[in-house]
Length: 211
Image (cartoon, rainbow, N blue to C red; front, side, top):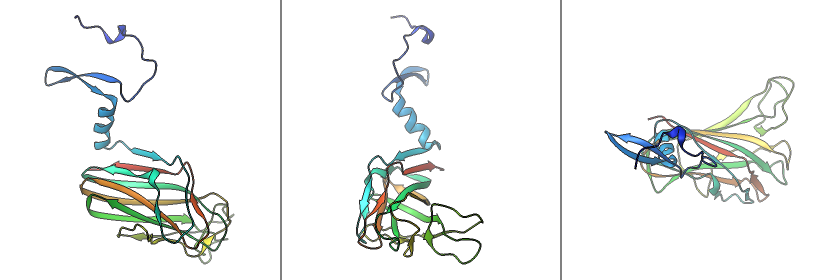
């Protein structure tokens, strides 16, 4: 069968990861799928993105995994950032608690930190209360760091609380991990007290392989 010019082919109804692309491999005509191309580009530094599509709720100091933000990582060096929309449901004095885990695999280096916008009224003393409204003057960004995995006992968080209950607040967790055996990057979440704490739909994870 004679070859057909790409320009003469029928247009696809829509782009899809199962679509096939013609390639030349060492002088031989072959094909790959869009999925295979994406996988290759991700190993070369293209961001991997995950969005939370279902609310995660916890009303305990014993953490549970935010399963919608799991990401499998093959051997390599990565930076990552969780941008989280969180709420404390009933008590401003209860603070959110976070932890990072890498399950089933092995990483020789893992460093993570979290930050939030502090409810300061000016450049005075930090309150360590998570804020979402802002102030007229500049304030502080507070946070902490860790180099330990956590699962049911998340250890990065605020024990002071939030400015308002039932209100969306942004928190960011960033890290670097050097993976030697493939595993799954996980986010764990708890609440300081027994009052409900949620991670909202639209929270996201961006991972970039740097080596």
